[in-house]
Length: 115
View 1 (tube, helix red, strand yellow):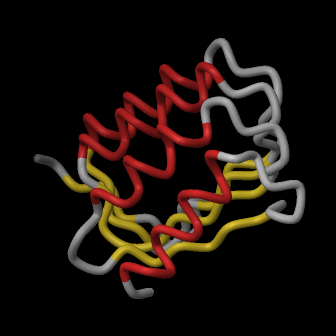
View 2 (cartoon, one colour):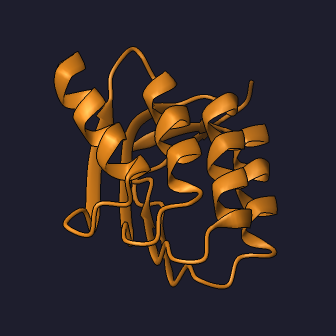
């Protein structure tokens, strides 16, 4: 996606757009978008499904973990076909402990790597 599309999506998340129920984002090089998505989603009540695909750093995993610990509405998180560091996976797991909304966490073909 280009920068204009990225800004539009972030604006929709921030404004809690009722039309935006699901978001699929493939992370190529600039993965800071995954951090921004997670930060904007904390107050979102309409987005129920999030797909983040690609390389996910420990910083992104921390943002995902934080989102999971605070969200009341995210039901489905797909991190398939990603590469995640072991420490990052721990951050996501910590975010799951207080979470009451997530019903599905998909990690198909996820490669956990040591960093």
